Every structure is written in C-alpha cells, then in structure tokens.
Amino acid sequence: MIRIFGATDQGRVRATNQDAFVYEVISEDTAYIVLCDGMGGENGGHIASARAVEIIGRAIARGLEARMPPASIKPMLVSAVSAANAVIHDMGAADGELRGMGTTVVAAVMMDGMLCIAHVGDSRAYLCESGAAPRRLTRDHSVVQMLVESGEISEEEARQHPKRNYITRALGVEAAVELEYVECAYTSGRLLLCTDGLYNYAPPEEHVDLIMTCESEQDIFLLIDEANKVGGPDNITAVIAAM
Image 1 (cartoon, one colour):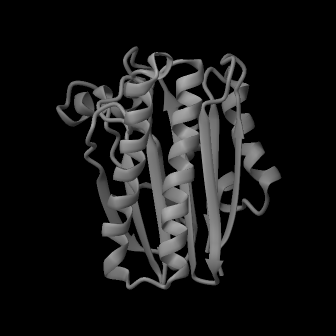
Image 2 (cartoon, one colour):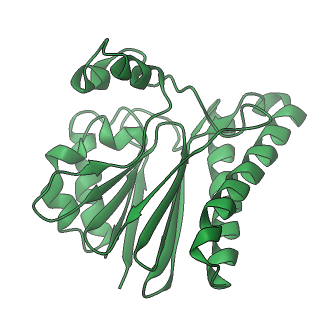
C-alpha cells in the first residue's frame, strides 16, 4: 500500500513561493508525484512550476489510470515532460514579462514494485530504507554538480558554494529539453522528493528519522521546519511516499 504526504513553505526570505507539486495514489501499488521549483522572476517562476505540474501530472494520471504496461512508462514521462517544456517555452516567447522563465522537475511513478523517475534541474529524489543512509537517485543538472564530478569540490563544499543555485538545465528555457531517467525496485521504505530549499538546509542524511517516521502532512512540516531553523532562505518543498 502506498501513502503519500506533501507540503510546501515559502521560507523566511523569499517574497513568493515558486515551488509546486502534485501527487495521486491510483491504486494500492500505483502512484505518482511531480515536484517543480520555478525560476525567472516573481511571476514567471510561479507560472512555470504550476503549469509543469499540471501538464505532467495530468499526462501521468491518464496513462496510469489506463493501466499502461511498464515498458511504456519511460516514453510517457519523456512525452509529458517535453509537452510541458514546449508550453512553458511558448508562453515565455509570447509574453515579455515571462521571457526566460523555467522550472526544475522531478517526476516519479511507482507501479508494480518499480520506481521510475524523470528529472531536469536540481530538484532531487532520495530513497530511504530501514537501517541505511538515504540513497540519492537523481543527479543535479547544475554548475556545482559538474565541479563535484570533476573533483574540484566536495559534496559538503557544494552545499555552501556561491554558484549552488546555477542550474544547467531547466524546463521551458529552450525549445527542447534533455531529461534524465532512472528506475529501480521499490517495495518498501520512504521515497523523498524535494527542492533545493530543503536539501541545502536540512540535508536528508541528517534527518533520516523524520523521513522514515513520516505519517502525515504535519510530519512533513517538521522536516521543513529544520530548513527554516537555519534561516529558510529559499522556498522549501518535500513530498514523501511510504510503501
């Protein structure tokens, strides 16, 4: 049985919340989550993230409700993310106030013991299993990730790096987008999807107990509060699936 809990918070510095998410439990073993972190101005970021979760969530729901075969999940996610990218890009091109807007996205589908994830940008997915440290399933599309992979800085240094918010891919910025796709078995534990406002200031590795014991939206806010305790400089969003 899959249960999902999610929450978002503006944080203590930003004037608006540009994060957005949607989730749905379709059946006992089938569900999806879509989480986005908008960018590109006060209005643009909010619009980009909201449209992305709407378009991608609706496409996933249609496919899962029709009981698509597992082999069709990746093409469905690629199609959904590409459609959202095209809509957001066209909106930006048509309206000068929205030009350059974009959003990260991490979209997860759980079905028949499998976890399938498509992502663009630096929002993340972690898998937390009993007795083990959280396992990061996504690779950031960011400047600091490139520096980490080249050995120039450590993961710890990346959290404090002045360019940690510089992403190298985002939905809606270009006419086409390259997403990354991963899949793995998922039969137990907690799946965490979150924006950088959470993992930069309340690293999942340091809050395993809160993640593993999450049973409600109120519990999600306990995790979000950990990021606010150190200043809450960014919007903070977390969604946890419990299997």
